[in-house]
Length: 235
Image (cartoon, rainbow, N blue to C red; front, side, top):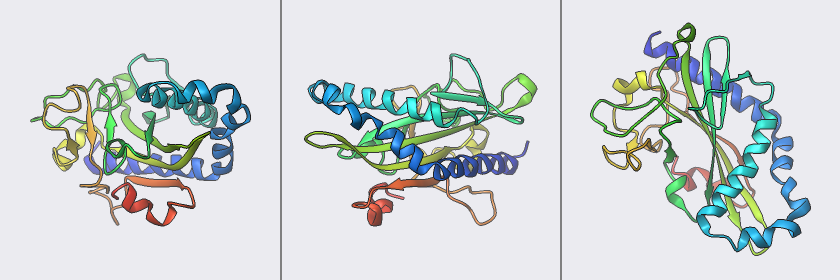
């Protein structure tokens, strides 16, 4: 498969995921807000927990909604190395990871997103961080494609509010000669040596495709930030 063909399929499935999410936007938002029905039972405990745990706890709740939404996307795969959701389709294995970022923590969404070692195959030759996904899988030589859904949220005095939902496509590792280390942040040792921060603000397009479509799609932005969302995420 040529680099241009890789980008074609990356964009193809990005479009499909974007379509599925936007078609089910109300269903998705209602699912993410389902916590509100019983917030009197959990919010105090959540609000009193340490900040790092708050983010992981919120992510765990959000993941349940996306498992539900993607139940018809493809055949789930049980491999222990991979993203939150891992599907086999007729010509690809697709990883979709759910990320969450607090609005006041710009480092997790403004122009970049943390990508773990089990969530990517992208590693330029001169970078030293670890990645554990192949560029292609041994089974039928199916390509490995990786996507991220980043949920930006804010914690008020009595609730958690969804501010934005961003969908991203991280380049396959075979495209390392196209994007090189320009999209890698945190130095050549990567993000704690395991994975890296994907710096989409430096290159957010499919370089090899006609019209150069974006690798970053805004699925949702709340009314109060909708007009500034591109600036907020540094797109």
